Structures are given as C-alpha cells and as structure tokens.
Length: 360
Image (tube, rainbow, N blue to C red; front, side, top):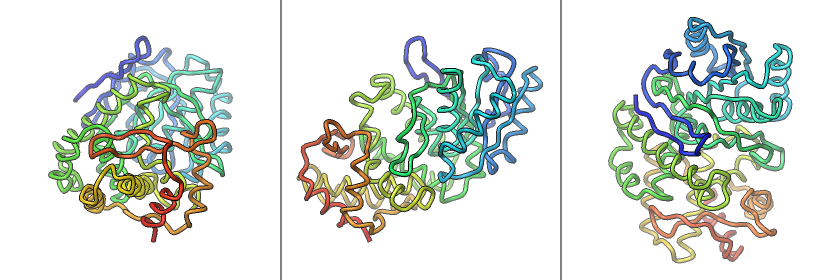
C-alpha cells in the first residue's frame, strides 16, 4: 500500500493506494466518528463491491445503511440527490454519521455533495472504483450535481476524511471507462509534470494492459500532483484552475450532447486537443507538440476530435463555465508540455477557429 497526504492543516487526510483495500476495514474505522455509516453506491458497482465493504465494517461492529443509486451521468441531478437525503432522514442519520461513497466520479460527487448539505455537513469517505475517480475526482473535495445548462454548476467544496483507492477494482472496469480515466492521468503531465508526460509516452501500453506496477505508479504520481495543487489552492482561486485543462471545452461537449452520451474523460480528451490547438494558434506551442499530445490520446483509446456541434453552440455553452470572471471567459492553455496557464486574453475568433479545427 502507498500512502499520500493532502495537506490542509486540521482537515488533512490520507490517500491510500493498493490492491484489496476494500476488505481492510481497519483502514476505515479510525475515520468514523460513530459506529454507524452510510454506504452510497450504484446498481453497477454495488453488486461487485458493496457486500465486501459492508461485511468488513460489520465485523468491526459498524452499523451500515445502504443507499443504491441508478448508474450514469444522466442521474447526477436533484432527484437522485434527494433519494440520498430521503434515506438519511428515514434511517435517522445524524450529523456525526459518516457517508462512504463507493463508486466512480458520479457516486463520489453526489455522495460528497449530499454529505456537504445534510445537517450542514457530515463526514464522508471516498472509495473510488474507476481510474478517473482514483486519480482525480475523489481527491480535493469538489462535489456537485449537473444542471441542464451546465455540468457541475451546483455544488460545494467538502473534503473527505479519507480516500481509499483499491486498484483491484480496475480489473472489473470496462475498457472504455478505463480509457476515459487515462485522460485525467495525461492531464497532469501536460499541466505541470513534463517528466510524467515523457513516462506516459513510454508506458501507455503497459497501463492499457493493466500492468500492476505501472498502474500503481501512475495513480500515485497523479494523486501526488493533485494533492500538491489542492494543498496550495483548495477553493480554486488560482493554481487549482489549471486542473481544468480541456474541461471548458469538454463540459460543453457533455452538456451539448446530453449527459452520459460521452464519458467525462472522452470529452476532456477532445477538449484538451481544442486547448492545444488554441495554444498553437497563439504561438505558445508548435505543431509537433500538438501531434505528441494527439498521439498519446490516440494510444490511450481516446477521441481527439469533438462532435460537430458548431462553434456558436460551444461558445454559448462555455459561457456558463465556472472560470468566467467579470463576464469574461478564461482558458487553461499550454505554454509548453508540462506548463499550463490560465488566461482571458484570447481573441474569440481564434477560439472558434480552434473548435472548428478539432470537430468532425
């Protein structure tokens, strides 16, 4: 087991990464305030891992309340959130009851948001079961649901007390979902870790083959990058915005097509190529760098072109982006591979041209 720490003072918490951690209740129990916990999962992950997690905690004398959600991004909305609140109230859960989110990014985001809101805040634990959740969404305390006009527009910052990333859960992850997670892994190399990007170019085939050593190292390196950024800028006032490389364009894809049509990582990959194209048009990176990025996404099984929604549609959807300040849209772009910046000094005609160049 590898352990990292997210350094947030009194709210610091560990990230444990390893094989078979779901069965190790002794890693979880010290983070429970009472001997009652809620496990929020979904109808796909639940049959695979709920009973293993529940059994270990019951043996440790913890009462478990199960909450099973429907699967998919389309259900990341108010109605599903209310099913969590209904169960918490029905089971007389208290502010001190811990909510455990067992699943991918949707379960983690919704479970975390419910924990942030219920009785003005209850403790929660993240047990991510997808690559994307293990390397990104489970770390950092961003929780949210979607709105028809924009992804993750309604939410709160609410840090977990523990992140438990069991790498064995990736063995049951569909290939498409695994590839989607690689988009977030590649992101870290692009925004702040050029050496990691070089390593990914050399080892992407091993990752796609689920080679355990390469996989564990990539997850650890990704989480270390995320933890450092979150510790420096918890509520995204500055550096943390760099983690949104490709997301402004990608969220427009997800919203424009309808939530769940493209996986989040797929949209981020295509969105990152739009950001790379725009960076190239500004003269910050050259076409050779764009080609390197494209090749790596392709080898990871990810799209490098977005759907042809039309530049006006993209721009309208992007107007709801959370990086808009004083009515001006800001972009995360690349100065080089390994260095990203946030800028609002972009001609929108260049943005439209970059979108059209990367749509088909």
